[in-house]
Image (cartoon, rainbow, N blue to C red):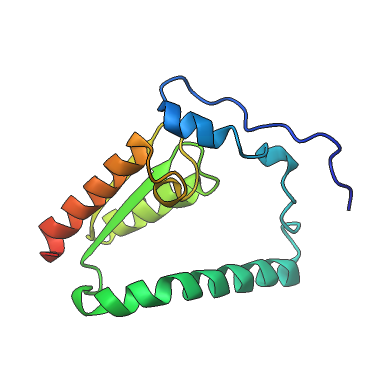
Length: 145
């Protein structure tokens, strides 16, 4: 594996993105320089990626799930906030479409120039604040939290 000799900052940040978010995005490496995922046919490689992601997600999410699991009902609702620079953007859209088709109350909320997990990664950015406010309002409206 070769390491790029020059690290380029994140590129193509829209001018419509807040200054706070622009500052953070400029600290990121260009996604083109990030390690590649396994080849499409490398099932073992993808299983390792999946296992690592699930382990990290479980460790992070377990306390939150325990706190709110009593309020969540199957197919009751879904909220999908994401950024247009989201590495999983097509997955966000497919999840929204599947939930909507299944009759789940769902909202897809996309933010110009934002990256994966931007409400947590850039918490003080106006976009992150707005996303959290919308998530909170959605939960209050549908779960009474």
